[in-house]
Length: 460
Image (tube, rainbow, N blue to C red):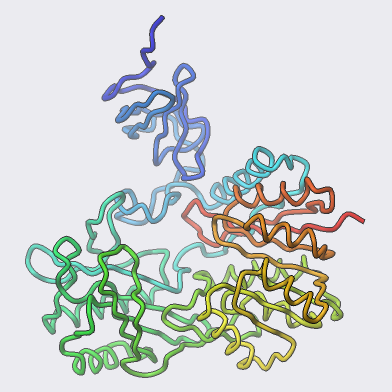
């Protein structure tokens, strides 16, 4: 009996790619042994170099595609294979949408036991490029001493100098490069994470698509920002659409981008954007969906599934700055939004005032605690509950609270098909709810990420 693997490290093999992982790597099988091969596509026959082996699986590098998939396209980004920010630029956009649909179907079936639920075709974009409205770009120093701005190379903290990212709004790309050039001209130093020295860590640009307003955030190691007056003056002159220049201080040895302290250097504390008919104030650290075009698609679907007639009480758990809450408030009798982040609730209340909504209430806390308290204090019984949790999904306590309060409908907005499937299984196994349908929405073209909206209804 031998434990020898069917492939060996550094061996070159020919194999067929059978599938894609949720991370976008191709899956090849060699005598039942799985090899993960980035940049390959299902149906392709390829020459692969084995670069790492483990007992149950290994990793390969794509050397040559012998037989191409009809979905293979040439990635337009010159640093695509180095960056890692996108995983699917080598796949046609039609192929990407089908892959994301398949990802949702398989997660629901395998993890949720929901093989008979209708999963609609993925809602994609007409123009799946230049969609991100926020760029967070680290600043470094080139060997010649000049500043560089770019994303980290895949699996490293080495900054790749670049002029543009083709999934970013072009205004953001231009703003980041201009700020880098101004800082370089003024002799402002970049932060060195190994030595924990230097000044400028990141430049963040936030662009409001509907108003054209731009916010520039300068993130430094400490409160010192040399040539501050000249820097502000040059940014205002060279990037005239700028309405807000913010200084954030992050003194920690950390990969987290923002620090706790934020000051306005010039202009407004907020920029304003619109989704549909609703205005939103966006601060430097506000969570706001990065793809405004698809956010409208996502929220319209959530509103459709909520099926509001005007008499309903709605609870929006994980409400953030009130984006979904205010969409729902257009048609609900009253919306109650809950979030554990105090700053998000402050922003949500401000957004309600901006839009003159009086039928919304926002509270800080965990929904599984706040909603029962509301029920006890004023008899709140939600007709509809909306959840939009982080990638880890809903806490069991929140799911139990939903089962106890028994809303007629639950609208689940998800950024992770795996945790969506797990949570839907939890709700349906109680016998109180059934999943009616799921709609995937492509919020992040060229990447493996997919968002979904699921409609869950009470079993009468």
